[in-house]
Length: 168
Image (cartoon, rainbow, N blue to C red; front, side, top):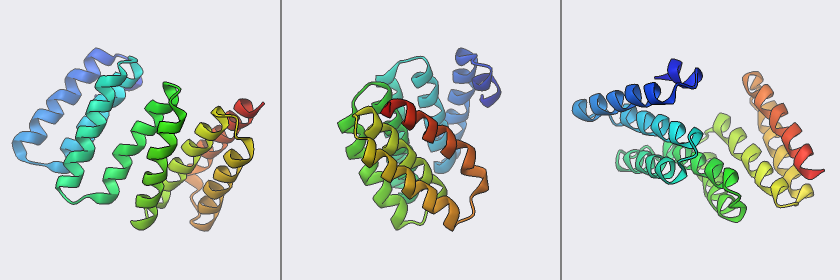
């Protein structure tokens, strides 16, 4: 499904992701099931079918919680933050991302924590809260440097440019 997703052939990607979900459910593989649900949600997000996307992300989160994958549940919730940003629901996104950050800190999910802080920065910049947005970016940068996450630098810089553009 990922190849088709990358090629933006969403109907085909969805077909493969659903097949993966069916297999994961039959084999009772919770992690694979939650990944498939997140992937299905990403397809719906790209198709601007936000309610279906949210439903998939929430279902993925529930699978992870049921299987005591508490840190990973925050990863699923982070997708909801992106939906809130796309839909202009900045306050809703900020509420969710605050909980996501708390969970990721608790479980030491530093790579994902960078994504959470950059998402928070985008939300704050979209609300016109420039200083707070830059503070969130500084948190992301601190984590990047502290944990030597060279692989996350590109995403951080992209987020920094977006925040600067949103902040005017």
